Amino acid sequence: MSDNHIRVEPAELVTAAADLDKIADRLESTLVGTRDALSVPAQGRDEVSLAAAASFTTVAEKFGQDTASGVLEMRKIAATLRAQAAGLMDGDAEASAALRV
Image 1 (cartoon, rainbow, N blue to C red):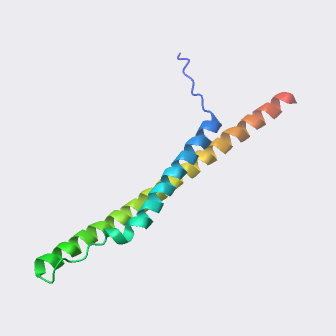
Image 2 (cartoon, rainbow, N blue to C red):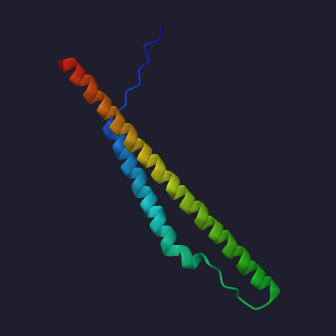
Image 3 (cartoon, helix red, strand yellow):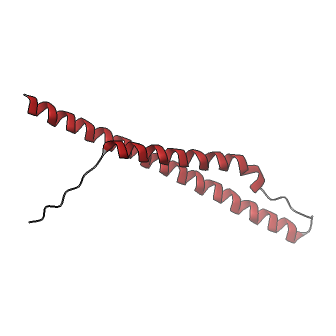
């Protein structure tokens, strides 16, 4: 039989969640701050310039959508870590209270 144990520190989960939120905040603010700069104007009125600008702008818009989705997922992970930490602390408090009876 194995004596493997998992040790989880709720405070570390909360710290990790806060770090993920900070990263998500930085990504989001950078994305918002550069959104207009990512739109590429055509350098001329010829077909190639118009097509290239449209292509680059479409890629930038897709990048923005994907980044926003990534930010949302990071926030969800942070929320899950906080919920898990709270659950562990509640469980520890209940076990401790049961031992005092």
